[in-house]
Image: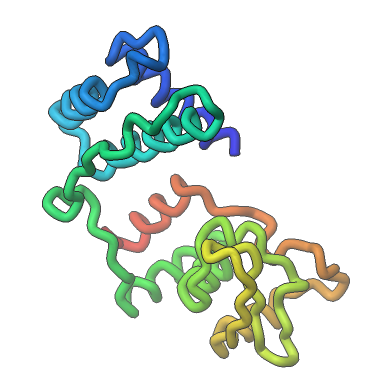
Length: 199
């Protein structure tokens, strides 16, 4: 994805500046460790530092696989403990919070989006790819394809979600038509959470 490419390119440009590397032989374990330590001391979370670490390790491994270097110089690059400094704690919504969110979403035409996320456990990328061909309304089943596990899963639909799909499916809907044609952005989600009084 373009955003992913941009992110990785940004990290590689950053490490070149931080280590003053002009060739791959300058890209050493010690120099990269110092750069990441400095980045962490700027107040970045361990998770953010570890994300950069993974990008750099993947780059070093690619260099080895393509014959640009003899070995992965960052194979033993240490990882920070994310459990000791969590900036954002993930947690499920309570029933009351979900009810408030659905009320806010209903006013703005986003109820089915949040309902599918909550009752089918779909990730945002899976929500955007969901088509009517994946939903068997008669059998009450949902087929999840190309998910994180890279397999096909068939799961039963929650009765409330099944009713929402029945009510929202256009009469002329094709198998390839998206169930949720308008994706909810992260900014919109944050605003909806704020409107619903969810921290």
